[in-house]
Length: 553
Image (cartoon, rainbow, N blue to C red; front, side, top):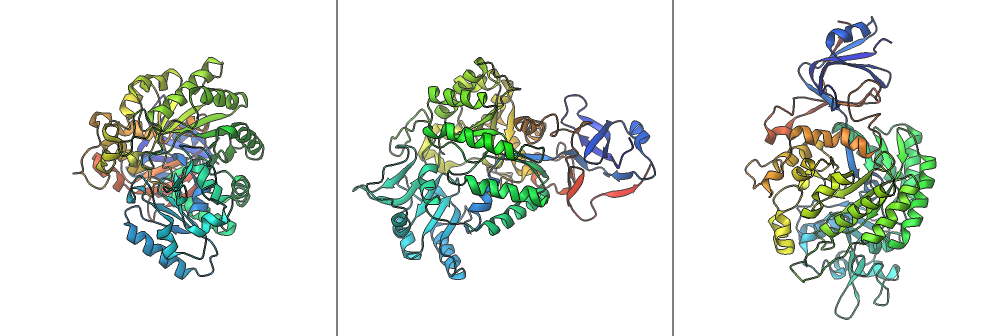
């Protein structure tokens, strides 16, 4: 077989177990047919072969966003989008501006306000009543783990003092001293009550946004995404959007999804059934549904992460959605159905439940080939659980751009804020770390180079003088961060034999960088430009004048 293209003349990092670097890569159609010495690549060249001179640039496997919300982001970002740095006054002004410029909008939706704008009692409906008294409005926070509504929305959704909380203590409607809802919706089930009662999105706009996000991803070097689900009630829109993306053949990334996540202990069987049915519709190397997502706690910012110590502000203690036994039962059901498992777990109690689940799954005979298990975010891991990631074959997911010193959380969680994101310890234990953006929760997280840099330096990417996030010794190497965005994420997607490294037989998914990020100063990784992104052998993004292409050698 002769090559359609041969890449040479740069630093080619393969992320493969064998040769980590090679001199040349040859592709034919959408597959890699050779990765090795330049002299051997010459045998694959004929008069029709294009020679792509990298001119010293870096070539590596296409980045994989191992944790994002593609379907959700297309829905959530169809309205107001707040800058996380905005003050409360700036957010309210943006709401006024949006309503004035969109008078035909019957319902108002928004995403991205910072949870720390408010104290532990959260935002109040009266603030929104002043700027939007006559239309339903739902605003979701930057984490996506809480919402904010006005009085009209609560009335239309039938949420009153007599409405029971979906999951008391974890998913609930914040109330005043008389028991009346304040407009603060905490966690997915309470937000889902509003989303399933009022239609906030337009499917045509949602599809347009999905394509825009895909183009942006390609410009960031991303060739595959793992969608971590959305709120209950979005089952049909989820599948509809996937169907339209697959039909148009314009989506520029491979897609692995799960539909809606488990946010209620009683929904485990239902969600497994839905994922299994979705897998029948989408089960190819471009679009696939194949894992169960469990939302086992919330976030530190919303005071809903399940940690083993009381929150400092009010002394409250949050338990995981599924305790150790319930988590194990859910995991065994998912494994028996042939599904992989992903558990959102921020706090140490939620993480511990996830590891207990993994222990039960492994002891039942479901090894890593049969069932991949990922704990998403892995923010605060107790000492007792570090070694268990490797012991039970569990992947630790996180978002690199979250790893920076954030003293605003000190009054909320104290020493826990100084003992989080222990990536070095997890890797040293023998486990794999994988990276994702959690987009649209974090507006910077989609850019892999920023996350790679911050996982290494543990400080804000654009400020080399910033304070390093403690513990300082938990930083990882550039290679480890790259592997977390490539071959390890491919493993999480159960596709490590097809993508994630540059090896013969795999799909031709690459990214070409302006410079070798293994040799540039760590604080300058985020500045390195993406020159070209190739997925399935086809260029999905190319910067002007990035490569010199000629004929034969």
